[in-house]
Structure formats: structure tokens, C-alpha cells
Amino acid sequence: MKPKRKRLTAFKSAVLGAFLMTGVFGQSSTVAADEDVLHLGLTFWITGGKYGYPNFVQIKDLFEEVNAKGGINGRKVKITEYDTTCTPNKAVDNATKLAYEDKVLLIIGAGCSSSSIPMVPIITKAGVPMFSSMSSNDKVTNQGSAWIFRTSVADRFYAKVMGEYVYHDLGARKIAYVYSTDAAPNGFAKGVRDHLRNTYGLEPVADEEYQYKSTDLRSFLMKAKAAGPLDALFISDQQDGIALGVRQSFEVGIPKSVPRLHTSSAALADVPKLLGDMVIGSTYSSSFAPDNPDPRVAKFVKWYEDKYDQRPDHLMAQSDDLFRILLKALKNADIKNTPESLAADRAAIRDEIAKTKDFLGVNSGPISFCADPTPDCRDGNRTAMVVRYTKGGKNFETEILKAVQVPMPK
Image (tube, rainbow, N blue to C red; front, side, top):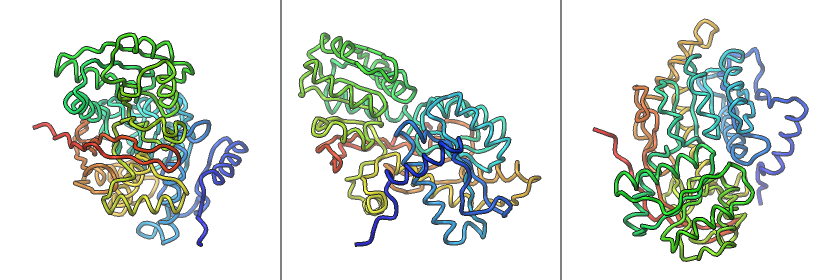
């Protein structure tokens, strides 16, 4: 049997060791600093959390494969990466360094929406494109910047599709919301709540917001239970918080018959691993399901499992789509790659990404961008899926309940 090229756990130890010695992950070792290379920046939550690390590895590996085949138009790709630790101030510092000191052509990142949101004014002022595969909060793209793109589905699309599912498919009317202050899950929960309120006049029976990284949610869940009997319970947080909330919702006695509904972070493989079969029935919005029979998805899942010995989730799929779109843009852009041409090169890459039309990757729907600096031109994937767990553990299983493409406004 051919050994797997790289397991995330072993590679993580080596990379984190280098980080602890240097404080910065540094530059790709595949090229020298004085070569005519395409210099890209990458900033994710790499240490101290699980949110961005696998995607950091995946994107690095994909570009290493490109370099091994000769690069892009004869140029190798060099990546300088910094860790945000999911901290807004750190993300701003990283964006500033990448834009002005490292003079990269494009920034990939950040992971957490709370990091991406304050980066947008920095990259806009610097005139450097930023491409995100993770952040879903609406504020990432509603700042009017022509320099931001993302392959992740925006919360406003997730909220609308999930809200319609809850109202029409579940027939839920007594709905409780328990959600953290972290930007992405907070925006999602409030988005669903507001959609149901504004569209159907449906008020929540409980609306409980708690501090991100809280370790005991039982008091909030008890308030939700007291408002019952419930038709649906939203638990919206990052992956650890979702797992905690689901477990404690059973502890406080909320019946299994009450659907547990979540933001896209529930798609992360850690959730079914942490919960085991307790996750069965948990339903979430996502852009990807590894059990999708589409041949493109099946091929990607097999590649990822063979390479990393784990099932991919929506973040890995969104990163793969980002890579494919960016690879084409870098091939097609007229990049002079001189100190004098930096501004023009950055604009050329931005404009090539903006030309993307109906790209079909492994995500839920076609991805299209356009030139205007509006959310509708920068949020490329408008198709949100509703997915439910049917099996927990490492080898979890899911089923797609529905997939809806939100139309562009006329």
C-alpha cells in the first residue's frame, strides 16, 4: 500500500516547532528569495486553534504541486504566511506587513470573520487583493471594497435558506436561539432570526447571546427549555462551542425530538468526532457535504482522504475552489513582477478574479464574481445547502436535505 504523503498531525508538529523557534512561519522553502517568483501572502489561524490549520496545509501543498510542475508561466510561487490566532489586531498587523513590507501580490485569508473584517480597510488602502475561503460574516464584503473576494457562502444566503427550511420544511414556529458573540455564528443566528421576523412576523421564544469561548452554556439552554415546548433550537458557534452546546442541551433535558440547528461551523469534522452519535439529527447550513454523489465531489473527497487520512469538510472544499480560481487568474493576468509594476500587477490579478463566471468546483453551486465593489459581486457562491448528520464519529455521514441558489437581485 502506498503510504500517505502527509498526515496532518505529524506535519503539524513539525510546522509548529518551526513557528515556536521563529515566531513566524516564514517563506516557502521551495524557491529562493531573489528568483522571479509570484509572491503571495497567507494569514490564517494556524496555532492555538483548529479553525484554519488544515486549510493552511492544503493550500501550501497545492502550490507546492504547482511548483513541482514548473510553476505558473515559468514562475514559481512563494508564500509568506503569518498566524492570526483568530485575533483582529493580529490580523490587521499581518495584513499591513504583507501589503507594505513583504509586498505580496495577493493575500489569502483570513480564517475567522472577526479577523477578516478589520483586514478589509487595510488591503483596500494598500490596493492588494484579498481572497478568503472561510469567512462568512456579511461585514467582510459589505464595506464597498473592490479588493475582497470569497468562495465561502455569505451568512445572508445561509440565513435565508435555513430560515425558509425551518419555516416551511420543519414547520417550526417556537424557535429558540442560543449563540456566541463570535462574528460568523453571531451573524448567522441573527440573520435567521431577522429573516423569519421580517418575512413571517415570527418572533423568537428565546434569544440568548453568550461570550465566545464560554465553557458552560447550561443557563442559556435552560432559558430556551423554559420557553418550550420548542419546535427548533439554534446553537450557533464555532465547532467546539457547537459540540458543547449540543451536549449540554441534552444534559438540561431538551428532548432529542427538538431539531438542533447550526451555522456552517457544524460541518467541521471535529463536531461529529467530539459528539459521536449524539450529533445525529443536527442540521446545519453549508456549502459542501462529503457524501454528495456528484463525481467532482467524490473525486475531491477521495484525494483528500488519501492525502490527509480524514474526511474533508466545507472549509477544505472552499479552499480547493479558491485555489483553482486563483491559479487561473495568476495564469491569465499580465504580471510584470517588478517593483515598479506592483500596483498594476495587483490590479491585474484582481481584475482576472473578477472575471470568474460560473466556475464549477466542489462546492454547493457555481461561483461568479464581477467588477463592481458590491457584496453581490464579491460573494461568489450564492448556493446554500441544508445538511443533516446521519452518523457521528471520525467516519461521519451526512445527507443533503436541500440546496438553494439565491438569485442575484434584478
